[in-house]
Amino acid sequence: MAEKFDVTVIGGGPAGYVCAIRLSQLGLKTACVESRGSLGGTCLNIGCIPSKSLLNMSESFHKAKNFSNIGIETGEIKLNLEKMMSNKESSVATLTKGVEFLFKKNKVTYIKGVGSFNEKNEILVKNDKSEIKIKTDRTIISTGSEPLSLPGIEFDEKKILSSTGALNISKLPKKMVVVGGGYIGLEMGSVWSRLGSEVHVIEYLDHITPGLDKEISNEFMKILKKQNIKFELNTKVEKITKNDKGVIIETTNKNSKNNIEADVVLISVGRKPYTEKLNLEKIGVNLDKKGKIKVNKNFETNVKNVYAIGDVIDGPMLAHKAEEEGIAVAELIAGQSGHVNYDIIPGVIYTSPEVAYVGKNEEELKEKKINFKVGKFPFMANSRAKAINEPEGFVKILAESTTDRVLGVHIIGPHAGEMIAEMSVAMEFGASSEDIARTCHAHPTFSEAIKEAALSVDKRQIHS
Image (tube, rainbow, N blue to C red; front, top):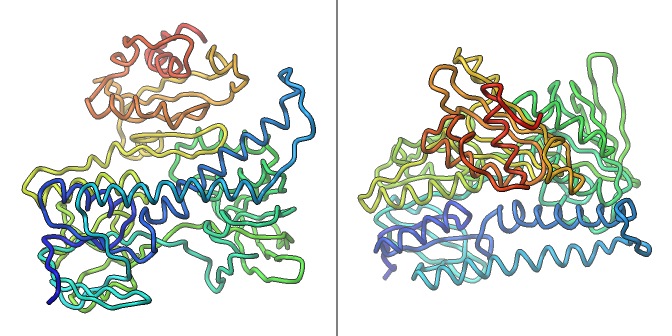
């Protein structure tokens, strides 16, 4: 007889595993089905965590090569790529085992295999060794997303790479072309540029990082150019062909056609929801035009007691957004008041310097005809940033003209990803720029730039 669960979560990524743990904490008998063979989803296995490991190590390598500039004399600095990759894999393995431990601690049943709907209340799980059926009162879909390619171009993960392949390059490419000027492409491009590759970024639009505040985006590109990353904007990739040496990328822009030769090409043009093996048509779950699962405000699909969270539904494809949805739906199912404030979900680009934001950008406020004030403060005038030779970038605060309520914060600079948390909390509690300005910040810290930017909203900054 099939085992019966109160709730079954299909997908063990940030949305799914967090949701499963919270459900079990709330007293519901919970199973989590995961096909990868390890928990943590794309983020932990082939996304956020391994990329941050490589970003950190490549930054350390780059800094080490320039130690003499700050009075540290060393011998020859060499790259051991195999050891670097091994270190990355070790970090991932430790964290995935940690999630398994959390499942055991919280009494979540972990089932390895591909889960699909046999019927509304029955899940079929297949793996290499067996096939089982489990009964469930409710099901939560959290199967995440996968990389998009360009029409007619397939990933081989050797010469034509997705983000997955870009994390597992075994030999340093002399030249890498990145198609797409978004977060993932720029992070991966930064890694290989620091390690010694010549990196070219091709972007279809007239700016990088679509959706980011334009002023931040422009500053970001200026800084990346100083780091020897080259950009081709307003450019379309028409065709990619492989040869013995690598790849040839055929492009067009307003003025000309061009061929770019490279060792590898990373296609980073977005991601798409992964739902194809769920057998959703069997139970009649509705999808939108982009293939995302339609849900109501309580994350329930058009099929009663079938829910969806994370990358498979609308919204930014961010691990922390997925986690918040996982907790919210668990609490809603348990009769509590789960909620996600989508207006205050921060985003971070983990380059050097980092870029971070929360709330609205200037273009969005203008489009909505919302009157606002702007406060800015450069890290060039921040004592901590100057002391460690990382003075690039600035903090930008947008506040409503009449109420002074903070509507958006955008930071490009050292440790921006950590600093944005202060402003996320402030905005969650409806803070004004004056509230931030009147809050004492320790000296010398990077976060003083936030206080000064808040003072700048009313033109009363002290240090610039």
